[in-house]
Length: 304
Image (cartoon, rainbow, N blue to C red; front, side):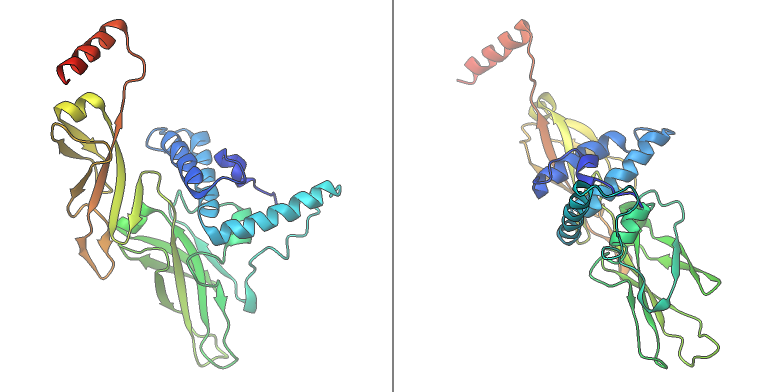
């Protein structure tokens, strides 16, 4: 198994704080997102890589484990450790109880994480464990983490579970969030009376455009100075497609507009949705020619 340097992938120092990591991820995600690079396999692979890196470094528990692993791995390298000889056993999550469950993704760009990620962090989605064993003769309760994208959480999605030679299609409902458990009844083995329960433990991966808080979504909208001052109509991304937003004259930096019903579906009632909040990021002109500078000076005098 190959060690992955998530700090290098995001281009940040190991001492970077949460905000630095988030900014670096968002900048790369906006650049490499498949919408901006249709058909570019190299950009797609890098996009998967930064999502994997941020999934770890943006989660305090995962980052703490990763930092401990990194220190151990670097110390092993300094001692002259040979390639492929590092002992991963103390760091991998494993699958206790002798139960083997495979989760097959269906067109999930965000869920295709590396073997390194699956081995080290496979049991750390949400707050659950990957498998919970029960005493012999009692129902078996198994939890399997699964990654879905925010788009999949919005529309609902499916996963294929391979269990004891059987293939089971599992539906994840719209509105699912990190920590949501989807229950499936497992078929009983011939030598057992109780079949037990299987749970998919959902982890919604970070999105480069939206921040989710409950059922509400937040997005930053770039706007030039003149559109903010004079007013404008701009296009805003939503998970259901772009919409037009009217920006009144004199709008201020960081001013937030509420788009009612454009957020996430409510898990118990998907016909109802949260709201989308669009926050303005006003870009100021940096390089002025002589004519522009003169006009700004005239405007400054007019404004006193």
